[in-house]
Length: 101
Image (cartoon, rainbow, N blue to C red; front, side, top):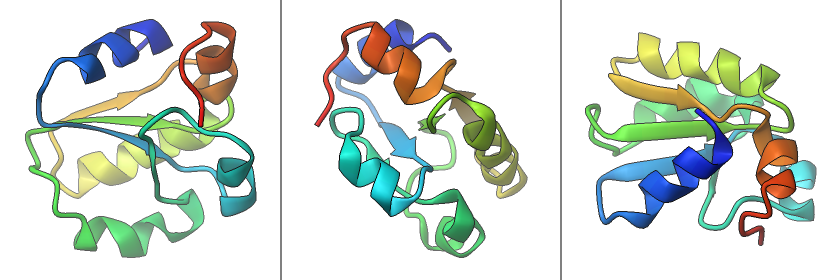
């Protein structure tokens, strides 16, 4: 999904989640507003602990979309039904001038 579409979806009160799968150093340097940090390197251990509704929209992002596409597969394999990759990652999010913390 395009960053602006994801941002718009997150503005509507709903059961949706934005997850940044980059490593801590990257995440700490700047991330999408309200994004939860779950690094791809530890995602296999974190997903089973995840308390999100498996039918909730889960948006995954990284730097440009490569790592988050891998994360989409992991979340889908774990039974999540509405998993989306943020096209272009944080690079596209920033280019669209969307909020970054």
